Image 1 (cartoon, helix red, strand yellow):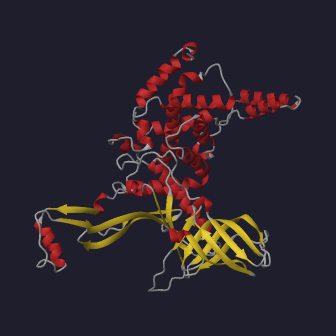
Image 2 (image 1 turned 45 degrees about the vertical axis):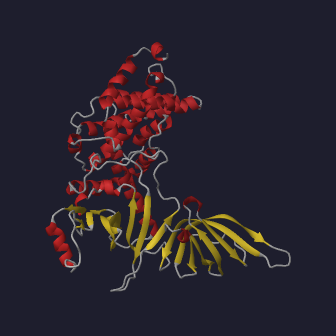
Image 3 (image 1 turned 180 degrees about the vertical axis):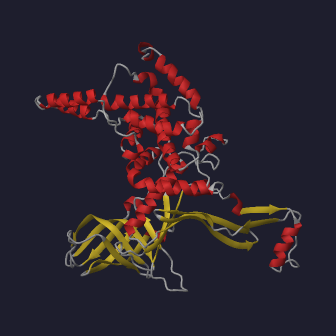
Length: 500
């Protein structure tokens, strides 16, 4: 839907079984609008689950998950009144058929993202060959042009190996494949064109409904964003449905997603293929293992992972709010990802019961309730313990690449507590305020790296590879030791001096 004429669609829309009316649909992301005009009045009680329409040239439109924007009545002197409505659809499908969003008819989903070429660096599938006369002779002979075409001094041959599937993995979402979609333009005096769009496809084990399809896209988008080290914008969503007769081809439904994930405003640089943690082309077994396990764990970790994506959305913009959000990711991890609740020693358990009984006898107040809540948390994993637990997963696999990571994270959590719980005599924010970006990166790196390691990522290989600064992991590693040394010096400075 890149052409301007495809973003303004006019036709007839079936607002309700009794109300068919003229409408214009303008596709403009968050400002998408369906404007309807009718002789019949629009009532707010009418269902907006989905609205079907058909353009003047026969294309089928389905507006899904709609919401009222406005409605009213216009009347001119001497003319019959007409009613209008403006409706915002969260999703719109356009194609050769309408879509019932509740029907189990979707058998394949496909889409593309910003950094698929870097994440799936299939370097060998396309290329050029220069020089050898024998190659150009063979090519021209195949096209029966050898006699009529003059060969110059520097012949070049562009090629595509014909490889379509770059990676294919069986997961809990279904079969996930990353593929080439090549496009060709035959030769002319102005040259030739040979390009490819890399896209992701998902084939569920059984046909699914629309909501399930979008949930699968969202899950994979989380994974791809973490793998790329920056938020991935989702584009080109298409759905293939059941009902295609044998021997015929039907175009997939194109999906306009009004609030599709998009890259942040302060976007990081594109990741370099050498910096990304996973190498699907070079290490396919590792990638398959990580993707399948990561998706298996997603239902319990989706909330925490969404918080991580929200942090990445800020790109190169740092501040206290982002640091607090990065620390809080660990607090919403499921129980299996954090330390077990410890059984208190008998004397401490007895003291806990006694103190709770005493506090309950005190008149109710905010301070009393806070004290009760604090005593009840004895033995349960606190935020510092959760962060330390995840840090051990990273430190145990990174072969000393991040010494003193536990110390860095301790300072990050202390900084978070300073802004959540208030000032403390043992913590001087002014001494480390310049390290807020570094401490934030430490929390985000630990969260994402531990997540991948638990899914099967061999991080020791990444540590041993050359690295630049084209990925959030690589940027955190770049200058890490110097940052730690400076942080220790800043924390060792007396409070009175650091305030100056």
